Image (spheres, rainbow, N blue to C red):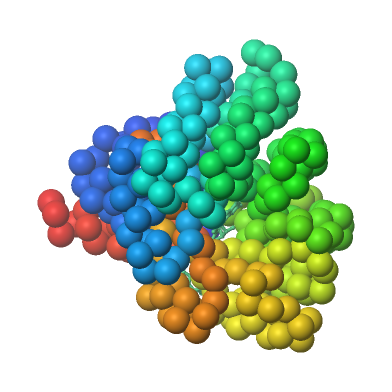
Length: 310
Ligand code: FDA
């Protein structure tokens, strides 16, 4: 019920300024973000790997409107890949890339082409180091461009994965094109404020769409990444994997850093592959407000921290 108002409010520049200036916000943000620097990110990877968890790394930022910022994001990923390689941690690590952070939303030039070039650079570096790449999915207006970029990069790096949002009305048709052998797809519910012309509205409709999406993916030949903290979706995914005769090496769970960390370990202890999405960097606002919108308890946690610290 609070999801849409929070997402709408968080788009206001005034609210953004207020939240990012409050010193108290930082302590709360730290729960969801691994730190600001590459070094913080490498430390987080080391800690998670020591617990038997895999990682997918997100250099925070989105909606970049100038080429310098887009290039800086590419450089940040290249630096991270390099540092992970030096630390012996690159193998199997995944880079999650938001195309709007690397050029897709530029208006001064062809954003689609710019993002394609940027994503290629990250993919080349990642696969050169034994790591891999996944494209995040942003609001519904970006899906066609993102899928085109995915197909172009897969010509050189067939392993590149993509996030697909169950809430979008187009998703079942998209999923049917993404189930071939080797195709890695992360199914998520969808975190953006979407209109009814593009997306299912309300949690029950989105949950039903998520299950339909899982059925398509689990019955296909691709690698399935179950991006959800929802205990019901986790149970249903495991049942569908068993029904389709899938081995433990043909699908995995993915969860966000700092969310249901105990469940991440519990699933790992059952022999499942669990990959943690690790956001790092200073541009945390968009990511953080989507987490608040998903779960009112996160909002309460935030408000409580503000009250108890003041
Ligand atoms: P949801 O928020 O619907 O919660 C369902 C239930 O799960 C709750 O009722 C509760 O029982 C349980 N639960 C959830 N959080 C809990 C907590 N903190 N503690 C205890 N129980 C909890 N979105 C997008 O649009 N594009 C993308 O590229 C990505 N990428 C991405 C990667 C990964 C690895 C994940 C996990 C998620 C994304 N998302 C995303 C976000 C996604 O679309 C979605 O908004 C969130 O995952 C929230 O939906 P869930 O399915 O996790 O559960």
